[in-house]
Image (cartoon, rainbow, N blue to C red; front, side, top):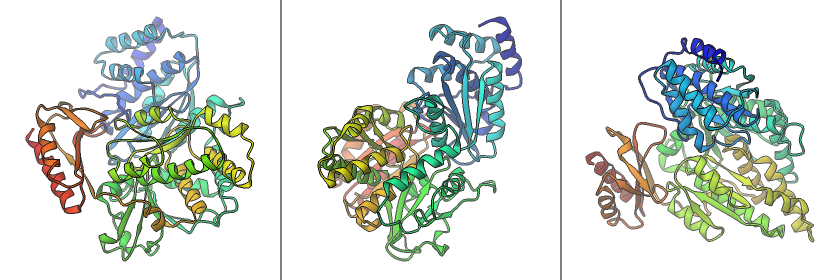
Length: 541
């Protein structure tokens, strides 16, 4: 890197002091308290520019968000040219640059990237960036801009976006004006694509009843308001709750997909909401709208026993079952499979294995996405509601050349093609997934009860256990078994054996300073005993 560039970087970095805290780029990018991220965001701007240069000037993305985390947290992650997560080889690169202690170390780390990846500095980088509604986001975006300017990047301001919208913009920019165009590279283009695909996918089907949406007081509220401008209300009647993006302290507070999934109950205050009624479908997004879970009531909201969760496992089962039927009816000779993690409910796995091939990967979207791409059509969802369906080039080619020989095959092929357009191919997208679920339920003529009746979840419990050092906990077998601390797995196995249909595993969180304990068993009472018993073992380890 020439002396002028180095001088500009050193001068710019003086305004972004590095704190003592060490940060690691993981599945969610960098994520921690917002007050610790200014220097990291400046440096991720530098890395984003270099990543684009390394890819010949293709557009890469930078998103400022902490998703489902509490409002004081924030984070930043990079998006590669096809809208996918950052290539794994660059994750330690990001970590090294973020933790360089002095200007000289920073320059050395940047020059090492240039040499390692044979980057031509004559290429002008292009980076699109967006942010969520957290109060800390604008300042962190300013730090990113300083990093991008230091390397003379072409900056494309995406603005206030959901994380999936940023992924969409990256792919749309890189495929613009080509035969593989994914859509217009604008926020409006995102809405137009989803709206057109949803109308086509539900053509001739009954309109859905009103859907109550908990927006987690996050950017998803804004996105849904934008989407509804492109769809007739009769075709997508939504009731938006928890949509306050202005009042500080409300983001993900007592609401949102993570709250509903972990607490297994309605968002706070829902019992007093007039629009919350028994036997009607409801859903919750998370703070950046890349996760979604559904639920319904079978009686008064005041009684928690009437609450029924339809989480990522239920979404995966619904999608895999319906799509596999369409593939068969359309007479397509392609393989459809489903990918889960250890958090998947055992009942969902048993249900799916009777219908499609099922794979298990470690937790983290990058692992599921990679595994799902091995199938012609790959369905993947984490139990927390983060997931999507990938249609490979092989599947798209098969759909394009298919010559249906019956009305049933023709209809199945049409619906399959429309769903392929409706489902976000870059990343799990709560809004796209919401529309997919509504389209499938309409085609099935199902309400929430019929959907839920496909199989009965085993009672399950997820606990967070604070430990002095989460890195001590190491796993194998797709995170279902511990290899460290020594002897702990044997203790867990012995405890699990005491409960009918018992299953439990322990893994360090990838986004928070804690260890997660998952447990399931034949009864709720046994599940509670198993979960608390394993948590006690973890605390003693």
